[in-house]
Image (cartoon, rainbow, N blue to C red):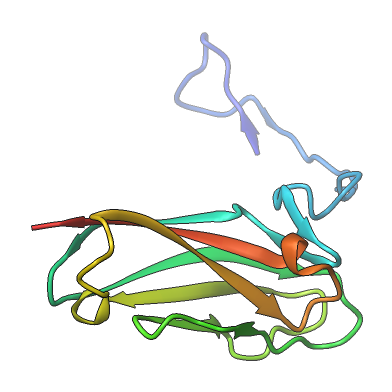
Length: 142
């Protein structure tokens, strides 16, 4: 890095070399505030707004794991109008992934309100079902 002075703004006066050690923070997973055992999420609610009739709408949540083994997640009792996957399909140990949920508006039952919430219970995590539930909020527009 060069050092310039106001009296010599066109030619550097000297150069600086910085050396140091970058240390990890206290909790490397603190940017994922929602914990499901060793699985962490950026958020525990997914919002799909402006879902239009007949279309397919997708939303993602970033997640990470401090698990010592790769993880493959599935869900328990998923509604017919929704799909679930992770990208990548197998989350590497200590790795990150996206949880991807898609809602097919053409398959949403006619009796549901324009705004509704449904739960997704994630399988493959060692926690109580209530602690591994992701809520999906859907807002349909015409």
